[in-house]
Length: 211
Image (cartoon, rainbow, N blue to C red; front, side, top):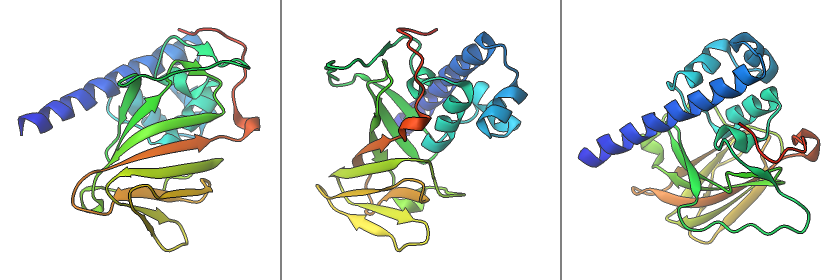
């Protein structure tokens, strides 16, 4: 029980830091909550809850938020960063990530200080479906790759039958199709997910650092 309380406290702290980061980005651009809501397509109440550390957004929602603010996705997770350049090589050592915990998922955002990536790689921990609470499918422009690292995973796809994958098995799909991930067994499962955004959606300001 103490470990569960510690995890909840840590998740709450991360939500607060994300909220502070969002508020900093919004104010630096001279935007109101209503402005951000209008630009991102999110409800004003949603933006407000994120800023107050009361809500952690799913990938599709924080992608919309970043697009609305006109920033690279990773700027929501890391204040400082540099742009990925032609010929560059980046290495992620163990524990070099930004943890993002939502109600259902726990994601380790890899290369958080690298801007302008064509791909967004994430390690994820999934709970069994019975312990998760979903009110909608996740959907976002682009393509998505998933491979199971530990356990078994069921991928629920909108208008298609669910797909169950074992360790080492993978899936590649159009991420504009609604989708949800869940562990197919009684224990948590581990995955690697790579989201690829359409080129025309990527932010391209030639900036070395932000904040």
